[in-house]
Image (cartoon, rainbow, N blue to C red; front, side, top):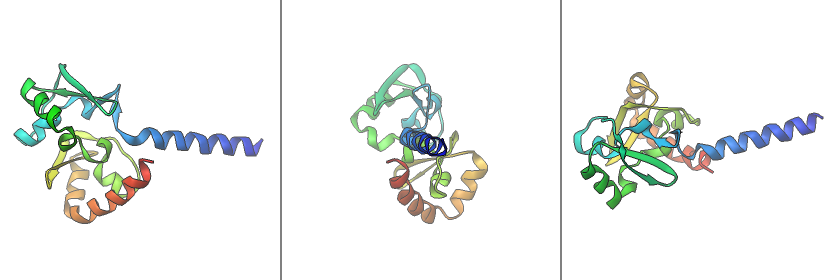
Length: 142
């Protein structure tokens, strides 16, 4: 019986980790915020559900047709790093949800954080955090 419980526990953890490739709510990425607006306006702008596209099994909303067109040309430029999970959390080895308002663009990449306080902590040693997060993300997304 103990072996069965252990096998079920390990299976549940591997399924959960495999599902962590992207942080989605009801299939929607970035809680419906426009990924292009972060780059074009340097703001978190809520997208409109009627202006959307699907990319890698996630639905992205956009605040304008122009932003959707930009995304369609080069989606990998606009999607958040680490599947939309908290950059600080990933640097610590775990996947945490994010607040779309807590964002940073570094080297033309979008990083999200759990909240503004965590973003502040992440920003203090951002370069080191990005290195750690890149290493951890390779393991977490498998």
